[in-house]
Length: 374
Image (cartoon, rainbow, N blue to C red; front, top):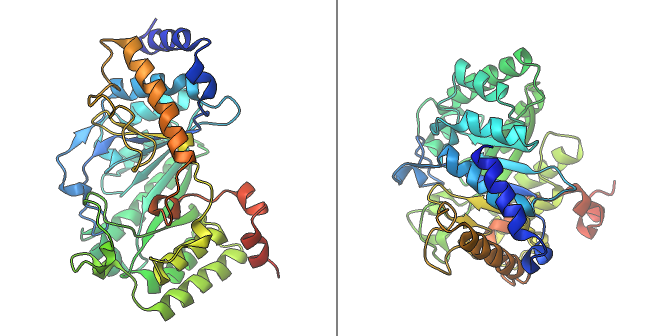
């Protein structure tokens, strides 16, 4: 009996007829940040300034084991591998194999800088379900400036080719996507990027995120007014309206844009007036349905509600010396923070702004019905 099986049996036995388990919502997805650190030097993210910390394979397994009793039994579990740059973790292929063997839908976000013919084949053959590649503009100079690395644009195009060939070689069901952060430097050329994506057989979707406060910086009010970061903020309101109207039009015509229309409207409203209450992003938060794990052992529901172990001021995620004690604390705090998220009253939440808007939600959405009338 391996470690994972032993731990899983103990956890299931511990949870039998437990009060908290009966009242905890099913977990539907993991965000596994398997590397803290990066080899890009993006203007929108400062994780590259951090000392590199990697999530070990053993702790990756333990993370899944601890949350195992809470996993939804009616939905496919989604596991997202991120960072930093997840390809910096040499165990990434074994991690994908494990989650795929558990029948999870495993995805990864990569900057493509470490992608080679060999690594692309290893990743695809491991059972990866979706690969998102960061690309900020179809214009190489704009993209490379935002990413902080000369030649990044060229490397992404090369990686698309590698991955697509690997998918064909292994007859994989894996799909490729583009992930773009909208900011002041790339907003005008976004329609050109979409037109390019729509012509690429290899790419099935492009998803947009609105730039928020630079990752890895301390929270500040009105960050976009700070001289250090204000260059990232789109300032021309006419350009903002024009571009988003074109994006919405392209979406209606069947473009590969993954964002819903309401999601695009939420981002447009945010850029036009970030201090205004944003009606399009005011949806019921479902962050409580997922768990984010960091390399240092913190387990988080949302950035505001924090680490599930913070109430005792120690790392309980990877400390198995007192297994029942650890399980009880995680269980109690998972219940507590899920309740906090459900009752959250924060307006204009930046996490919610870039949250995925599901198809089911759109069907009953008055904004969606209004905007999709022909």
